Every structure is written in C-alpha cells, then in structure tokens.
Length: 328
Image 1 (cartoon, one colour):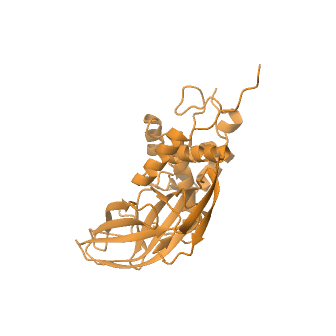
Image 2 (image 1 turned 90 degrees about the vertical axis):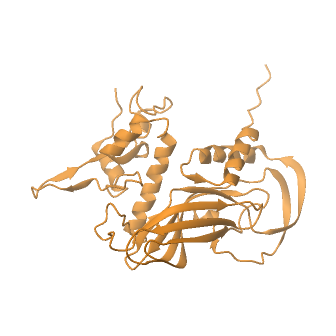
Image 3 (image 1 turned 120 degrees about the vertical axis):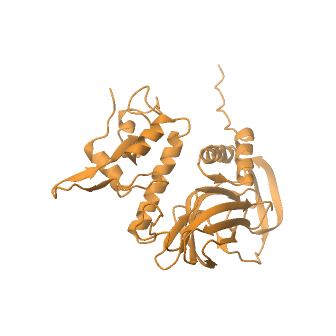
C-alpha cells in the first residue's frame, strides 16, 4: 500500500515554490491556462523524497505513514525532472532532493519579495542574443591561507551583442555549519585591523548578501574578477562551513547569472594572541561536529579543498562516542 499525499498537501508543496520545478537548473513553470477559459494545464508532480512504499526510490524504512505523507517529504517537480530523479537514485539521493526543495523555496521567496528577478536565455522573452548574455566560464576557490579571507575568482564571458554591465553580486547563504573547537579553553584576541569585500556570518543563514559591483564585459569579451570572503565570528581554532550560491546581476533589467552551489570553510579573521587550554575534550561538541560534517558531505555543487579536507577529517577522526554500556 502506498502512502500518498492528500490533495491539500500536494497544493501546499506546489505553492511553496510558486508552482515551479524545484530543480533550479530547470525552474520550469508547471501550471498555465487551457485554451478553454475555465480550465488549467499542469505538468507538475508532487514527488516523494523518500518512497511512498517499500521498493520505491529512496525508501526509508524508519519512516511511518505520517512521515511519508507529510509536506516535508514532498518536492514539486516537472514531469521530466520527476522521472529523472527516480531513474538514478544513487545520484539523486534524498539528501540532494531535500537540498533542492530548500533552495527552491528560498528562491521562490526572494522572487516574491522582489529581491530576485529570474531571466535566463532559454526561458525569458526579455533576454535575447541581440542583447548582453553572460556565461559563467570558471570559478576558482583559493583557500590556501590558514586564516584571513578566502578568494573566489570568477570568470565570465559575454556571448551577446551588447556590453554587459555587472552592477551587483549576491551571495545567497543556504546553510552554515557551526563547528566548534572541542578542546575547552579561552582565546585572547587582538583587534581586527583589515576589512574585506564580503563578510559572511553564521547569522546570515537563509539570507542574501548584496555587494555592489562595477564591471563591463564587451560583446565576445571575457572578464575575470574576484571576491575576498572573510568573517569575524566563530572559533579561531576551527573554521565554519558555508553552503551558498553566487549571483551576478547585470544591465538595467537585472538579468541574472548564477553559479552552482558552493561550499567553503572560513576561519575567523580575529587575530589570536594566545590560547589557554584546559586539556578537556567536549564529547557533545565532537558529536555535533560529526553530524554537521556528514550533512555537508552530501551537499551538491563546488567544494573548496579546505572544506573537503575538514569534512573528511572530522568524519574519520571525530566519530560519535558510543554510549557506555551498563555493567551486567
């Protein structure tokens, strides 16, 4: 027996993304008018993130009927993407679909609030090859330093016939991994004496940072520029993990170019004068770090070398401590 969504739950899942496909690479509108003025056409599907019945895609045995039929277990997709995700469950895992769902809802809210205008080459009647048309060529993450800002180098190409004036960049922070130093102690700080182009903060999870940019890309030309990303919050002994997307807005109509999701590890920019350790390891913090590392290891998109190394090290060395067994 399948645990199906009710009509009300399907409607809720669809409305939370504006009836658009939750695959951001698709973002297709899934509802529209029939020729008959009284009817509508829908090509959307309320797909199960974990299967509705045993043997289905991404089935989770620990879920009960209430879990399987809840809106939280549903993702709104077009019919094509719904077929795609169920045809390759190794690639399209429940973790990836959950991330799609969350990112799609963030984007839908940004559009609703007027903070984002989506105009892509394939789907927009506004943008054409006669105008400016930016393409993202490359993103290079430079995180060789153990402290201070990280450099995000961006290379774009203008495939259109007019100059593209890049005027604003947005950093949409999806998720923050608040890792903590499990060795108890206190740091003595020296005041930060530098400022950076972009400042991240764990308080900005689910929010977007706007940065003014002034770049002009000639038709057929290529431009390369960089963002220095730093933070003052956090424990200087261990970096915070950030999962975000970069957007570039250009020309008067706010045409949009956006990257795939990016994961980085940022150290605090606070200068450290010294550390007074107690020689005690907090097991609860170690376990929390392990859970965060597992979650970030499953996130899609680009990942900096430092973030990869940090996540793999925590998973390998900071596994949760088993509960002590009672004496028999």
